[in-house]
Image 1 (cartoon, rainbow, N blue to C red):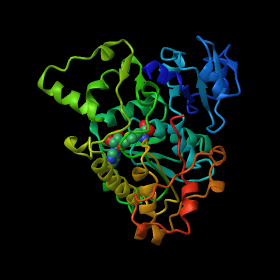
Image 2 (image 1 turned 90 degrees about the vertical axis):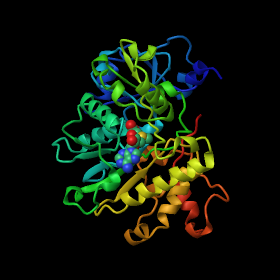
Image 3 (image 1 turned 30 degrees about the horizontal axis):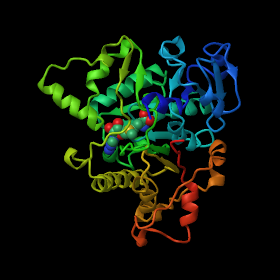
Image 4 (image 1 turned 135 degrees about the vertical axis):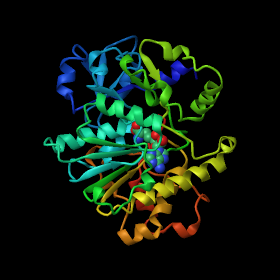
Length: 373
Ligand code: SAM
């Protein structure tokens, strides 16, 4: 498939940032004159630059538009009233059920901050008085700078406290700082094998006033690392894309930095290294004294990084002592209860001792997958 073909199989997803605006306001301004359609299929088959949108049936305040429609220069985008965020990336914050549950939220792996600002938007709807907080951890220094910019642009700086560059694993679960934390969002570094329509899914476009940050966020994907290493030696000239007036930051959501570069092509080794780290960070989250909900997400297609980590986490002593379990489908937020694609089992990938055969089906039914479509 050509890149263009790949992109046109996916809509342009636009999340209305309810901290600064509302769906109604956006439909009357940015999308004035656009025709509402009822199915995402119509968006995908739209010809030319037909101005249509579809309200997503699963995620509130999310719109699908034909990928050819360029909103990158609209004032609503440059002001942070709308955010380009892939549908699958909107599941974790929504799934936390923050409208129904009180307390602060931790985002343990936050940069560039799409899920952080989404969580902040939901929290602020439930608590317009501003008591509740989102505490965002990001270990990487350069990515922390991007995260701060993103939070500011989204108007979420009163809600979000950025702890960066700061390792979530070093945060003490019993610290008084976290006693009000009721929910934890965990979207750790992964293999990135599930990322599609790359332009839409993983690049963050910031208005040109934010271009300073581009160099700082070098650490990230393998590709970025390689480039950065090269740039360390030679002069760090901007690429063609970087010199465009409107900057396209190559902000890969995935960072495989836990894995040595020479091992990165060996899938099995890579998945073992990543899932060890993912299990570690997930069980750390399970220790937070008053946490009642965790969403664990990756943009990987591999069982080892997804259901495999969940089964292993559930078999740990901390999970058993604290009573962690996977939320049943019927307990999940309304929009995702009706989402059909659920966890899948892969034979031979886990040792029998971590799987409780009686609850296996329920665990898989509680997990959510998004396909490439
Ligand atoms: N949730 C982000 C979003 O939606 O915009 C994407 C997160 S990305 C997949 C994972 C991030 O976690 C990377 O920025 C990485 O630097 C960070 N990270 C990895 N391990 C971490 C740790 N132990 N503590 C804090 N951040 C960590």
